[in-house]
Amino acid sequence: MNEFNDAPDEDVDAGLGVGASTGTDRLDLDLVMDVPVTMHVVLGSTTMTVADILNLGRGTIVKLNTKVGDPVDVIVNDRVVARGEIVVLDNEDQRFGVTLTEVAKPGERLQSKNQRAA
Image 1 (cartoon, helix red, strand yellow):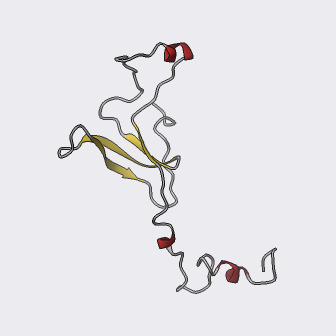
Image 2 (cartoon, rainbow, N blue to C red):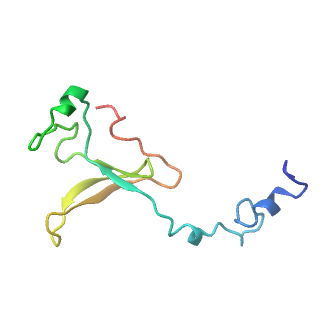
Image 3 (cartoon, helix red, strand yellow):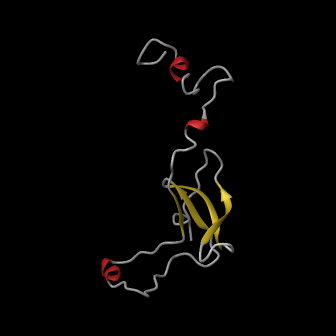
């Protein structure tokens, strides 16, 4: 029973297949396959003062905390889901890509490289 009505919990969740007692009812992932998500690849970061930011101009180089060859975080909707290496795409003019080297398992969370011990 649940707190909203006298029906068993599995009847309430049966529409989504969550908590159902039979093995035939499953969450239909097709319902969410076309939901857009935002993906970012974080090359690195730095800390600057407001004065330093106001002095930025064309040609200024901003030193990041990541070295060449370090893995980069792949973030989907503010959650680190993978890590990879930056690659230059051969068949694309001046484009970068990322080769995934580590992917989180379902239910697992990867820690952001900015939060890991240096």
